Image 1 (cartoon, rainbow, N blue to C red):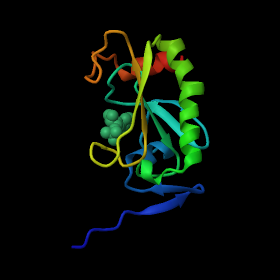
Image 2 (cartoon, rainbow, N blue to C red):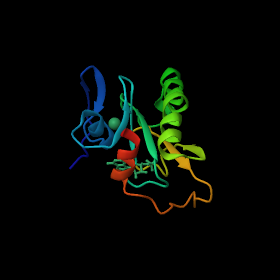
Image 3 (spheres, helix red, strand yellow):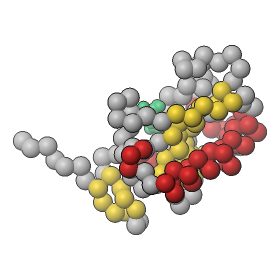
Image 4 (cartoon, rainbow, N blue to C red):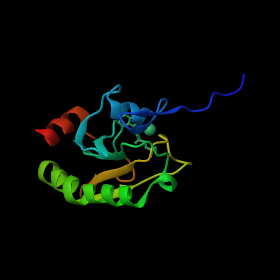
Length: 144
Ligand code: AMP
Ligand code: ZN
């Protein structure tokens, strides 16, 4: 039996990949702890965090990895981290720093481009996961 090609469709004017977990989070068919959203990006809590407040920033257009990303969207995403997420995390979680990481191909579990925004706390165990709070509790702290 030949393998079926991955299906990409246009949904509400954007590229949507039917078998992509993060596309399903964008369209709401899979729930997420979303802390920020606009017409270009969505930001939600990682369900398996390294530290409290570990966020994933994703473009609403399906792009598999860094090599498919356009410059404008990359700059836009970095600005969201610098101008919006940093202050939310500082105000609500009292973080000591931010580590940003991003995987491509090998080491990349979800093939929809995403930037990890990982709060750092003095004496945390990073890159090992610290003893994290329940994601739901962190979500309530972040969104009030
Ligand atoms: P990567 O290895 O860079 O592809 O990271 C994928 C991340 O997505 C991992 O840190 C997972 O914990 C996270 N993840 C997987 N499924 C979900 C989900 N349904 N909601 C939030 N985060 C998820
Ligand atoms: Zn996708």
